[in-house]
Length: 219
Image 1 (cartoon, rainbow, N blue to C red):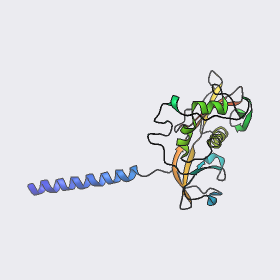
Image 2 (cartoon, rainbow, N blue to C red; image 1 turned 30 degrees about the vertical axis):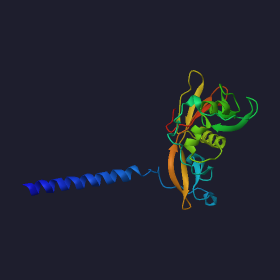
Image 3 (cartoon, rainbow, N blue to C red; image 1 turned 180 degrees about the vertical axis):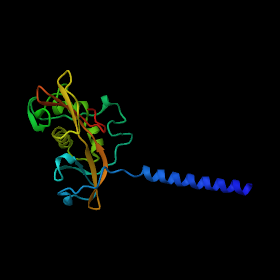
Image 4 (tube, rainbow, N blue to C red; image 1 turned 60 degrees about the vertical axis):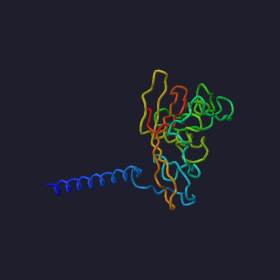
């Protein structure tokens, strides 16, 4: 009887260890959403360089984000450990409020402009006032140009959204499409994560109101 009990315990422990090992391996693996892409021009990048790529924009349209960085202690994809109200907001110098920085062709609302804007109203200043640089950098994973990153996400989201919201009572619509972050490892892009920036536009004024560095679409 004792031998049977010892054998049962040993069998149970072996099964538990096997299960634990499988779960550990699963937790350490970042699932890639499909085959690794072949992106034109990445052969010029260095080991550790980070890029953002939105599949809807094509294999030759990606943005470089610099060398991979370790996230700040306590940070998450969308927030910092410190309160949002205390986060540093970099001064944005881009001209008058109506200075047009970029124009985008949107799928549902024609040509949409990104303007310099104002901190409390619309445009780039409003984006960086509501969602400071560090929130965008937490998504980037590299020290690249935050404004270039934002403009790239807006372009992908507006041109071919995977999600869109209905026009709200305030004449705003939300656009969003997945953008993948890759790090160059052994000369090839290695998948890190997917983000779904949420872009809100004014349908009647044809302008970008704001953008959110969201992991999950808010649309």
